[in-house]
Image 1: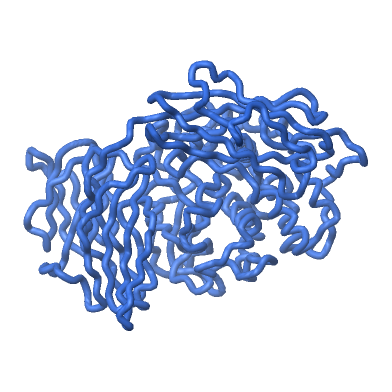
Image 2 (image 1 turned 135 degrees about the vertical axis):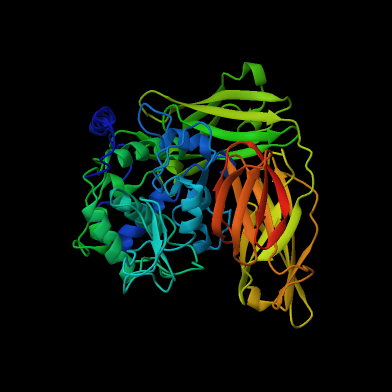
Length: 559
């Protein structure tokens, strides 16, 4: 059964919601009569067009709508059962369940901020999961990580796609992850994959044979739950697209399973000359612009899709009296018209909206959509917040760790107390022929695994923090050679990065005898062995850390 620990009241709420939830009329009409690759591409055309959230940094605010227990502010974490509560996001990561490294980590593709595969995850489980593929862990061998929900270890025979380890979720979530992967393999079938543990470089079937067998089994054994139905509706309200494998679980069978080769019929095809219907945007959804520095601007795209609309739609901004002109439509015109025929194409229509505030504060307005023969009108909320432009300090680049022939991990610390959105790593590759190659690599945390190291003779990296589009000064430069870390005169370098609720430890080699004491000299945490990337949760306070190989205390502050 699905998640037996749910309270009966929560189940009752979910059942009531699932019974009333309806697939938007006309959303899947283009799938009628299609099969196999043609059907998959038709789904791709529907799901790949969606309104992206304003920024990766804003994801916790969206998770608070999509990933909390009913009538509670407890985060619904599919990677751990540690009780954590919002709106604080302390102890959690924004996890790409379909690893971003598989498409090369680009932040410019929709997958980077697509809520259909982004979930909150407890930090240690997220770190253990890494970018390993889904799979069944071989319990006859040593388990790499186990917390009762997430298991990481060696795969059983025939699974893993060449990866050393696989990630196996709890039984009650296996179907959730399977349908998430069906969605990703379809919505992003046009991407070039850097890692092909579970996917191939083709539009159909995209998923390789072993992963199809695994995901279909999980999909069948763990059917769509009320949790998924509720989340699918909330995501639709935010970004105007849905996971069709939740709405129509049988779709997976038509694409990869027992009904492969049959034509699909969602039963929603409109009658000729049907009623004009605006499928998206959704009434009362919010177009979020997030935080913008004074003097800067932000743009967002509002997606329009409909059926049988032959007349022009009217779009205007209203309720903007207190911050007039902060939100604008193309050409600074208000209202504007959109041809109904454009909205009814397979690709739909994207409307750019700009937020350019001239005063600090929180700002709102609304868009009103009417005309075109649709019934009534649609109101869309516009939200943005303007802050003073930040002043950032320099980060400190730390020695690289986990240096291998083809990869290493770059590390750094950020100035205490400064809020940042992300880090930008400048990587310089010095090639055998004397040329140099410079890359700019965004990072979410204060470390980044860098691959392709085998292509260069040696290389350097430096890093800066970025907040509201403003970059801080560059850090010092660290050199990485193939014979180890350059310029470090200790056998086992160790550094500590403190965050709200704990620390992350970086070390070139394993350390033994980790001892953390408070200001009174009392031991508050001891670990026999510490490895690179170990996370320790601690309450707010001032601490000192030593190991058998690091006798000089490392002082740090947890907030």
